[in-house]
Structure formats: structure tokens, C-alpha cells
Image (cartoon, rainbow, N blue to C red; front, side):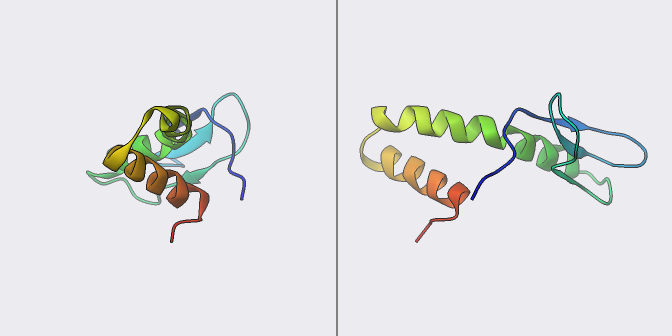
Length: 83
């Protein structure tokens, strides 16, 4: 499974409340239909996803024990291969 490569950005406009867009490219990754108090935080977390995945993949060789398991689970969840 492939995702749209990062970076992603959050944009707020009247017609697309908290849209997640691929930086420097056309299209929309996703958008929220309503704006309420948690949506900005949710949008920023979604927009950070490609960076977080890259950080986990880069850090994995330096992890061990519980941290390694947590990072492996996070990567598996992103890639759709979690047990």
C-alpha cells in the first residue's frame, strides 16, 4: 500500500475546513466537514504522519526492548500489517 508522499500541510479555508494537502502539489489528502475544537489538533497530527513514519523507520535500528516493539507496532499499523 502506498501513501501520498510528504510533506503534508494543514490549510484552513471557508470551503475546506482543515484540509490536509500535499505540500507543493495539487490535490487533497483529506478534509474535515466541520470545524470544532479538536479538528485542528487532529488535522495537524494527520499532516505530521509522513514525517512521523520516516522518523520511526530511521530510529528503529537504534531501538531495543519495549521501545523497539512500540516503534515496530507503529510502523506496522501505518503500513496495514499489524497483527
